[in-house]
Amino acid sequence: MAEGPPRDGTSPSPTALRILFLTQNFPPEIGAKAARLYELARRLAARGHDIRVITAMPNYPTGRVFEGFRGRVRVEEQIEGVQVVRTWLKPSNAVHALPRLLSYLTFVSTSLLFGMRGMGRRDIVFIESPPLFLVPAGLMIGRIARARIVMNVSDVWPATALNVIEIPRISLQMLQRLERFGYEKSDLVTATTRKSSESIASRFPHVATAVIPGGTDLELFHPSRRSPRLRESLGLGEDDFLVGYCGLYGLFQGLEVVIGAAERLRGDARIKFVLAGDGPTRTALVDLVTKARLDNVVFKEAMPREEVGELVASFDVALVPLAAEQPGRMPAKVYETLACGVPMIVCEGCEAATLVTDQGLGRVVEPSNVEALAEAIVDLLGDPAEVKHIGRRAREVAKRYDLEEVARGAEATFSALVGDVPVDGPY
Image (cartoon, rainbow, N blue to C red):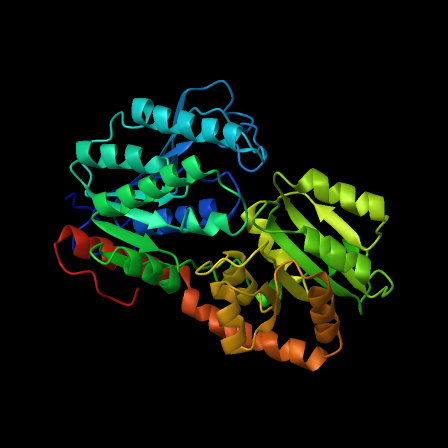
């Protein structure tokens, strides 16, 4: 294992590790996965570890390779002490499965052909799933690098997908085999929530599991970033109630319910909706708003993470919709909303619902239920004292998910794995 001092004065671990992250998404792409892995990678690098990332040319969520990366097969760069290698893929943000499958498979191929150049020996290869198609590539890279394999499961596929989309039987069987193959060939399977980890362990009791939760930057996301200027730019008055969503416009989010609630509440001039982001369902959502002639809904383009905190802190209530129940899922926007001290309305059947219920952080509604969502919004609008109380409570709860603590827990998990110590710690 490599030895090395920390790069920024952060206390190092006893032995520095050489860690490779294999992920299809990484900044400058936006979205929960890219942000989570970037924050973990850069914090581990700051603690003295040798961090390398193999990822695709940035294209998410637009499905078009970003300016400056087009027409290139391989790009190598340094980002805050992290060595990032990007390889070509055929991008797609299509709703249909075939174009997305082609996108996955082209990156799998180029990550093997071009990503490993100069890789050297690694102690850990960390494979981000989904997509499950990355698993065989990650296992091959891990064997070549003589590394321990960590398969990180941000969503338990294909089980989670089945709640939202219909998967042909032959495709389902293939995904299930890939899932089993990944679990059984990895040295450790990590999940972002304890419920997901327990689900994996119950089906595969011989597989070693651990939890590396999501988290947030408590300075970047803070109640003090609430912006009267931003609210005014959205056409809000001082007493207006801003209901916001910030994230991916995708099939799993079921954002049609938000448009339905906006139509139901269009008679109350105090309530405004803002949806910020991008993704495959954006055009359909804009069409719904146009056809219904709604003047209480504003769409904003996807924005850099550094600007998201100001928007979220300016919400009066944040929405965490899901198209269907997704047990074990904790959307990353939950942590950011907590840190900004904003109440949430979340959907039943996910990990976020348990948190909101147990800690009194907002309301829980049935997925895709327009009436229930509209009633929850009106309920919070009518109780300003509760909204303020929830805001204070949310900020306190957010301290449990400080990214620095998440990185320390991940570091301990990786060190234990490499040192053949049983993985058993706070995460």
